Image (tube, rainbow, N blue to C red; front, side, top):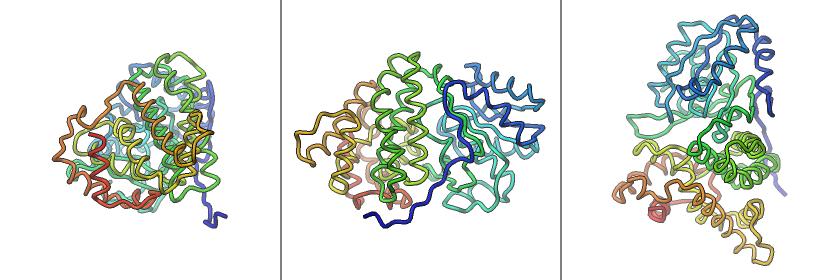
Length: 386
């Protein structure tokens, strides 16, 4: 019997499904905001999604300004530029439209408008004291689940490490998950964001903080993503695959928000901070190797993951089934045709000791891991991934 006390956090309102974006104007109007700030990136501007968002808001007589300087895996400087604009504009509503980068920058800007100091003061857990300006987050990728998590991730350039503002105030007032917004995603973004979502789901399912409630979301996320990621990459116009990926990413985000992720993310952070490896790529590459290490700590759950991913393992022992979970993830990653090793990413072997130390310092995530790790264990995992 699981005796841990369950807690559960999620956005105030989630709207999910085809054409759910059409509800944006109605929801924005409910905040009685006269001015809104749209936080996004150049790609979303070029796709026409930002223009559609602006049109829906203008119908409700809401004036909208645009900050479109968000970059992939944004650093603190990128967030500070948005914060400066948000403070000067005195907006009643902030919208994040795009991938996790845009949504995270929007969320940080929201809380920094109502809390003193700088972003550095809030890198950590539960340091934000005041609710931010209301936010509506709308993902155009299916990966980060940032529309449903209390974590906003930024790169600390000086420390060469990704850090997080973790607070329930990061959660949006409204999350709108419309699979149609992801149709324009190119295959490379679809694959890297999709493997990121799968990582969230698997780590949440095996986290020390997992509960029967988070398992519901993590399990469904693994099933949805496992059956549709390859198709979404190969045929981006397949609406069923896009739907599965968007809902799977949302479910994985909800599971992540409440169970937390584990050592994969801890090991991925130095890759992003030191070598500018995209977050999804780093997670996906490391995921099967961390899974192989963690299996002994959660044998039944890893065996279940193999089944969720469609592996025919009923005739095998529980331990053999568990190892098939890692093999299934390797097969998915190989089919996505993205880098298969740290060597391909130009990460030198001599960087491993420093990366291992940095990963061990991410105690917030290492504490969730289902099997205790030493710095030597981390080094071996990096070496296996070379």
